[in-house]
Length: 224
Image 1 (cartoon, one colour):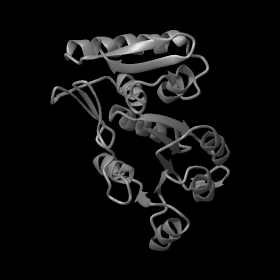
Image 2 (cartoon, helix red, strand yellow):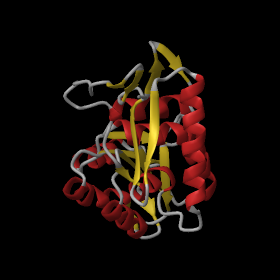
Image 3 (cartoon, rainbow, N blue to C red):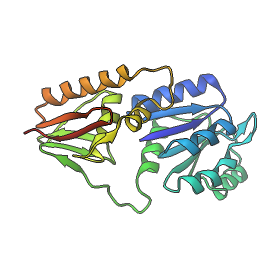
Image 4 (tube, rainbow, N blue to C red):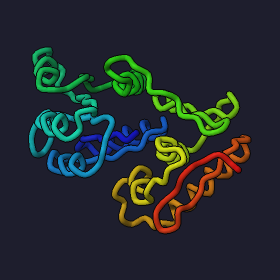
């Protein structure tokens, strides 16, 4: 799952990115409404966390664009505007949640998890390949019923592959899921994550293999 943060304060943005990334999510950060609009038009997000007082306007202005382009994305306001009328205005304008600064980091993560659950309360089915299971809602990975811990990008890679087990996932899409639009990164970075994930799954006893479709991408399937 990828989260967009719109925050113009560099120090706060850095803390937010580190905290959310440490909890296993992919994060993109921008500082202006214009930059956020460009991201929303190009990349799929599960959640957008928006500040309100920004150099180029009120972050809530993005709500209609998000609803139009990504109707399944959730919107959380994270702002110092704590007046009751401001909260009501933010929610009425399209936000799903409204958290004021200063905030409790634990509460922020709890709200993020709550917002990422389906609004109708349905649970996304667990994906299984041999004895490997992935639960999209909790992002828990188990092998033979035993939970295993993966590094952040290993988990993002596994999530991309487990969405389409047995089918090739394009390399460009995987790279975007893992790194966003970091043009300075080389394909070797992705190859390294694939190698680490293969080892982690093998060490855990998973009866699966990550295969290469040369020039196209990767897919995960049961070992022969």
